[in-house]
Image (tube, rainbow, N blue to C red; front, side, top):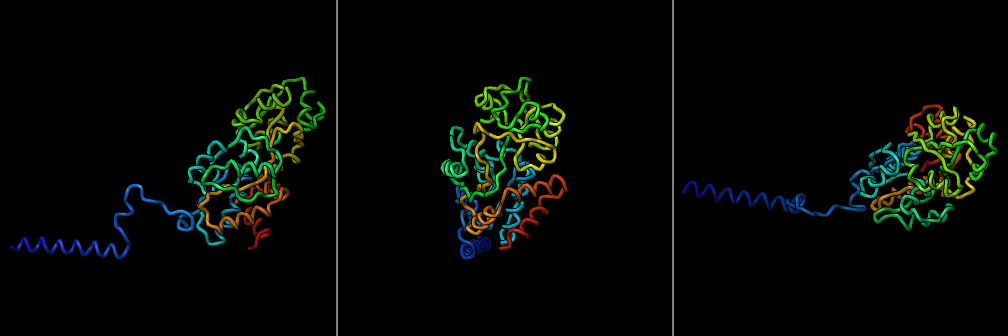
Length: 311
């Protein structure tokens, strides 16, 4: 009898514990139920907003501007910077592991829609919005642009009379082009260049995004052409010439933010305000501070925000 009473007492205590759990937090098994739904939108605001960036100093600066502006609004932010090039990080964005990413309108459009014929800034933005995968949104486009360009040394341009991309037909010596390895498979790479101009070029990968190694190769003649971004301070500092894209090989490349549709409304509004204030000349100045003054991205971003964004 003593044992029976003890078992009954344990049963009563167990039922009482379950009742208390139900009153305090709902179904105690809900958090472990297979297939339980994950909060989205405003209900997911307890999770940090993950901001990513390319492995490119200029893109990291913009991402840092985003991150600091959101933090100033009281939003929780996590940084995932210097991930790599587009082939490396797009999957992270599409899967929802990254919530916000500064991008470039034309190259991103070409990544998602290789057949797109849009070239102007407005047409590219419209086409980009139409092709953006479900679960993602395109935030406002900035006036600032950082355009891919085929670049040569001034000495090479003067020797062959190069101003436009089509002028490379005048060059009778072999041409080697340098860029990140991804260029080889992109529409404006060696194959696209041949289709546009009829000129066949060799390709050598230099994995620094048009940085000092690429500039050195152009200046010492190791390569004759390279992809260097138009907002790079190295153009003026190293007597480099961006060839005018008279063949329409590149699409407009304005800064846009790609974000999850689950971003809080305050985050969307903040990033749209930031992008509306970003100008190309400001971008060049920030890039100069990074390359020449070796200032870290967070310091450059802080300075830009204090001057241009006080909301």
